[in-house]
Amino acid sequence: MIFQGLFNILDLYFEEIGEFYNHIDKYFRDIISRAMESMDLKDFTYNNIFEGISTTLKKEFIELGFEKEIIENYFMDRALDNNVTDLEKITSTFEIYESKFAPIVYEIFLEQIVDYLVEDKAVMIMLTLKSKGFFPTEFILELRNLKQLFQKTPDRIENLKKYIHIQEKIIHKFLENKKKIENLEDLEDPREKLQLLYSIFRIIAFFNLQKTIDFSHIKAYLQSDMDEWLASVPLITLKNPDLYFCGIYLSHKLGVDINNEKVWDFLSDLYEECVDEFEIPLYEATDRVYYFLKSTEMVQLWLDEDKVSEIIRKPSEFLETNFFKNFETSQLVVILKLYNLLGVYHRIDNQIIKALLEEIELRITHEGIKQYRDGMITSEAMYYVVFVNYMQNTLDKLKDYELLGSIVSRIYRNLEFLDFTQDMNFDLVSELFYSCECLKLFNCIETKEMIIHLAKYLFPQEVVQRILDSKEIVRSTTRLRHIKVNRNTGETIY
Image (cartoon, rainbow, N blue to C red; front, side, top):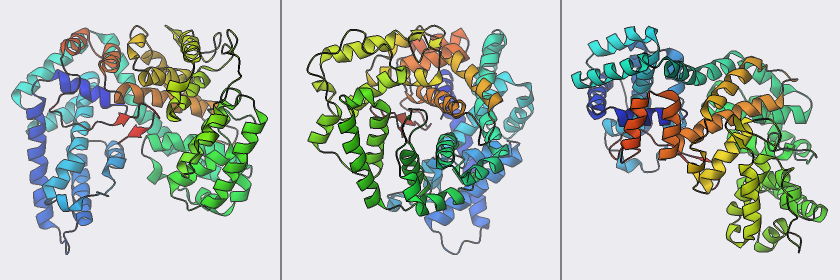
């Protein structure tokens, strides 16, 4: 999903992109048709046809010269989960191809085009693709012109080169440490076991690597040792949530059947502790409230209006000036996010909302976004600030800040120091995840502000100008996928 905005830019730039897609479809329709005729399928069920198309496409891409690891990763994308809700609407093999596979096929080709723009080694495979008839003549001329623009701007070549290798380097890092990651499931300390695996799993899931890692040990632990991990330990943070949340989250994502009634009882007790211990729970225990509410949503334990009122209560007198100055940037955003999620945003004193937003803006600098007024720049802070501006529909406030360069640099630096042991730095894994989440926002929030951010950092000025002049940011006729970001929760919408 960190290439979506990049592909949107190419889709906007090339006038002949539609004809290029047509050539791709024709080629693979012929390949699939011949493959299906030769397959000994006793039952032409959806699943059989789906697997036949998948196998055929993967084999053909590798024969064309595409890297096997890249192709395998694309075909692990959750968009290809073969569970359609309306099978009766699928009446032919080609409808399955068009609805499930074609958008991903286009992305594979567009990624190869990006490689060609910045990598000399990509020329050979491009010549192979040209010989197979994939490129219309007019499209070849457009592609040649774009490559010449890049050759005149070497800084953009370097930026784009670093950017497109992020996914490859992260996937390689995690796959080469597969055994080390699996061994972390056997750590004795529940905190190390669950918090480490939670942090690592979020990155694994981001890049669709779940099927490549054996999670059988942690799944068994989650099911058999609920009394051990269903516990609340103080000093949690947004980066490293409490044991119970990690356990519920991993159970939910790994399909582990846990005792929901036991979880409900635990969360009910936790609620009582929180509202009794804190005068202003949402401000004094933001992290605890946030993960408590996320947990109740996962297990479908809904709070009534009275309980919500207790969580968001505030003193009778308004908060003193600079009350929020010592809060983390991410905490400030989460407070606003929770007001929104709980449906009470419109009921909160405007002075409080204004104070929160003004404090957030104090953390934004041209070098990046700080976690405290005088603190360090972090990817976590950058993610939350971009998100809150998306939530508030004020992304234009960030238009003059160059954030992408900082995010990319942080990813490379964190990858270099990442080591999968029980002593690994939790914050390092978290920062890597938030960096990727930042890139998701820039790619999947399909607004002019976000597309321009990407274009300015990755493309020559001529491309930027064409987008600025464009009346539409995403073509109404585009055939690409459009993964979205929920404006309230930040969750990915597939």
